[in-house]
Length: 527
Image (tube, rainbow, N blue to C red; front, side, top):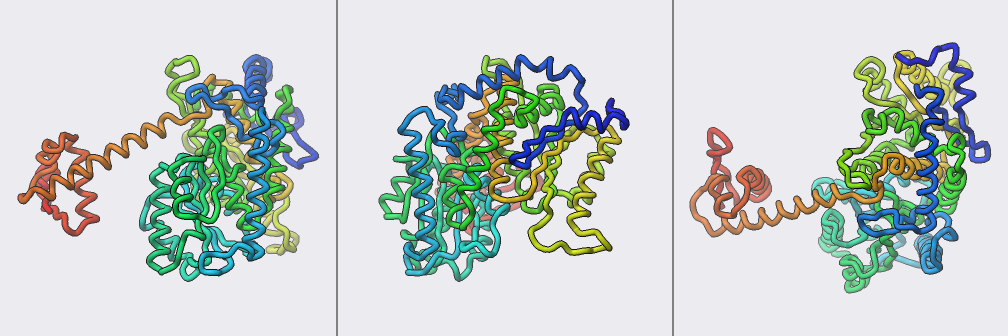
């Protein structure tokens, strides 16, 4: 149970409630069960984290494994960038994005078929899709001029579903392919699937395609060779999970007709607030310190994100990548094995009250909750569903009620509140969590800006594909049925991997036949 007594809640709230009145954003950590001397005990490492953040923003190498600067904070205030070249690149790209979108909306830029663009297909993976998806789901409305769609995986059935949703609007669809290296297979496959759809429909595609990529990348070369409509840059000092305020996020956002300037301004305003060395007035540092407290500095408790706003449904998924890819590290900066990380999950309130909140209150206490409150329920006239009560009143009641019910059972929570939901506040929320992740990485002494585990997975996937090609070649030159073990021996690979490859092939290629035995070892395969 909590050590915070019911009688002390009001005084504790007043002590640990931080409000940025000019932004309308507040953070309440009073329901986190930290001791009174906690901030004093964490002062040294928190001060070190603030100094490291200042050095990062000044252009110091903050990603030592890859020898890179980390510059996503410059994207919303280019004057902070350490060189004139970077400052010019940021400002010129933002200007080019806004100009391009204006020409799309006015009809100055038309599709290859001479149609005005009505739909947008974003092709990406990870941060190249999650950021634009969050923004689209959060801010897009039917009044906006261009409707968004996404290829965010290499699942052919998923891509067919999206193409079905686009339907007869394909000729009026702008396709934005996003990949820094241009070699990411999921994005490459999505690009090829989109091009195949255009070709099948007899629609020239080149002037419907836009690339967001690194200069000289494989994708950049394809876009140049095929004469694509536009190319926008990605820079090595911006990681995928923090790229939503680069061309990665701004091109889709601007094309949809969303407010890019307000989005960037919100992030810049939050950055300015969270540069203070006063940790009690630094909202991002408060979040990082609460994460540290909750998990003992080792991520021993999960982070549950509960936004009480439908438009923030994807925020927990966005934070899942931002937090887990940044903080989930085997080694610290000194090379010691630490196995750091914080698991993140969530959906939205009050839906969650009819799902897993039951376990949060009464089950295993292995988490802490962050409630995200939007004070203004909607812009339309409120509907009374009971005398004097609106749906928004119920939403607020469910949030506060769930918070109280969790506290009564000793479950810790943070509440982040914003006055209303718009592009400015979304930018501020994203910036708040980006900086909190950076601070937490410093608190636990890890590199929060690389992702070696992701690269390991890509390498392993490439090895599976190479083995599959060997398996197919072996089957095509063989005449008799063989077991997975026999085929694995022939191609010098692992029998279990070969078995799963064969099962996949048999399900997707009608020329490959499987004869089921009494066990996997006795199944035989033949072309």
